[in-house]
Length: 253
Image: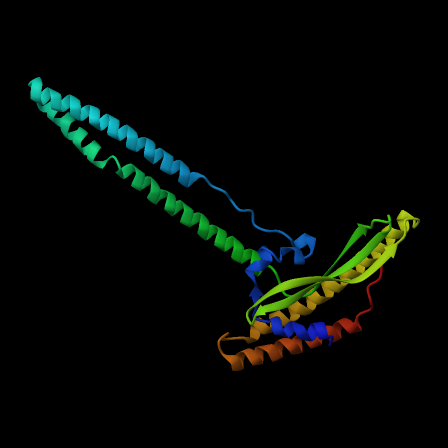
């Protein structure tokens, strides 16, 4: 069993660290550098604006009704209608600030709902990242017009005993001078990409074999003895998967 495969056991039961959706995102292969877009909503601001407008309108309308009804009662001999208008005006003036508070409360409720939705999306994005090494290939044109083809290894590393992130480093490179035919460079890059894909697929299969055995064996994540039993089961499944892979003929173009 290779050192990389043995190291997979240390990542059983771990989850991706939130930094993989932030400063460590570039350490993943480009195809996996996806992050949930931040949804900017102005609903809260609109509600507060609407509440302010309603507050002003309520104060103006209530004041007008109070002045009219009160004036009719005091100076015009107004009856029940004037009294009702004056009473409604008093209520509107006394409660006009309530619209702002209602709008603010509604805005807070909506913000909390968006926050919970974003947290769920974040958790799902992190849960989809599995801790097995990846390989990717990229080409770079240097200052002297030569072309460098590099294979990068994206390696999982533990941040805490329960969380992991990735580091990225070049583990293989080939440089072709400016006179090298383009088809030669393209063929070399494609060959390297094919090998990178095969290695990534092999390591993904190793991880899936180990993690499936671990998930089937573990009963209580807080029980150290049970975790050790699950890790042994995972390591055994991983070893069997690797041995079975060695018996298969190598994949060729």
